[in-house]
Length: 372
Image (cartoon, rainbow, N blue to C red; front, side, top):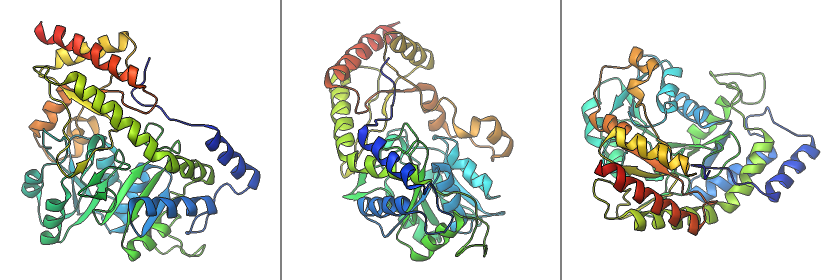
């Protein structure tokens, strides 16, 4: 089976872990973090092109810490897209605020600016646009709206390492940005996350928040958490970051092979890359016009050894938790996408020959199922 995504580890990562274990310094309680974490932060900030990167222990921790840093709490509202992983909305709930769930653009699967405008109230404090599947959100209009309304913008870049918007990497486009280093991501530390920002004060708050609101030790001055990134994870992250450009080239090559093989197939919609946008191809997304046929194609692809998957079968507002707590909404595009999209493997362990085979098998199955 060719999996939908897979961590890529080698001897360099093993050696980096070994060095940390032999040092005996596995974590650091001080707000500035341990030596490996600091090196990873400096390298990641340089790569993204921002002043600050603050390492934490998961992408969800990054979102929660970012929300705490801008003062989101009870009585506030934060606008999030309906079509993404539920962590984006759950992080808002963890602050005591209310996630306001809005629709997406069906061409990009990213948040709809029109839907954001309609959802604004006096209680809106922030917007979290998600660069879904690795395609950047059209950020200039989002930032213009935020400036007009006095809102914070937190990029959810969990799937978008290395993606670019008008020549700038995502992660440096909003007031803050949050990355995940979960095992399936473009680069991984196993679990882990990062918050990036150009704001000195927000960076200072984030370093305090990740270690129980302390500044020097036993001097907690704000609500925080144990969100520190262990040294082993940071050491792996440094090695992975050095490999990211190779990873991205392989993903782009495989995506181009799939697009060439699948192009012109009636009844399907392939991913787009608007001018000025650079996809990082975390996932390659195909949309068909019928849920039953989508599900049959995914099952048949799995049977022949292709790890096709569906991200996401259930939009956030339809999950049991958010059915209880969310404002009643009907984001029709998000619901349509949840019924009709599926994803194909494009990660770096997929060879050119395998990518061609995946394209051929997918075309054969789609032609058969769409004709039924």
